[in-house]
Image 1 (spheres, rainbow, N blue to C red):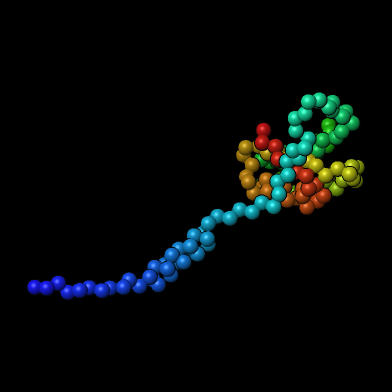
Image 2 (spheres, helix red, strand yellow; image 1 turned 90 degrees about the horizontal axis):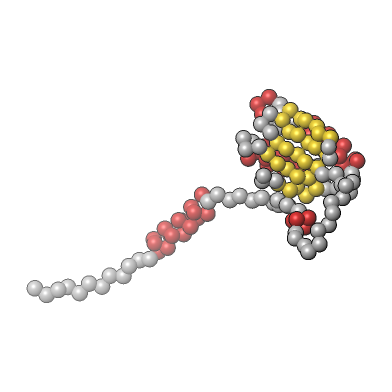
Length: 144
């Protein structure tokens, strides 16, 4: 019995279509996080040979997010903004305090944002956006 000669061409079109579909599905299901900017003001923390003494008249602005309130502190005078019902941040009161700071120090745009460990990421980003949107674009996020 003689062997038949087999001449089969493999059609690659379905395989190319399958791989194209897999690439599209990978791109659609991938997690894409876009953070516009997280400025940490590294110019003030760079090392140099000569240490400059701190300015005693400089006022530092701190915003601390806690589980039940937000503390805003300009220098040594703290202000407290309690959360609304359901842990929602009271943006209007916070914006009033930020506008007051801006009226006192119109040339300043830097603020330090810190949180407690129990604060959600959503509250951090919401506060960050409120700061940037109201004239404080140089937000340094404290991780201590």
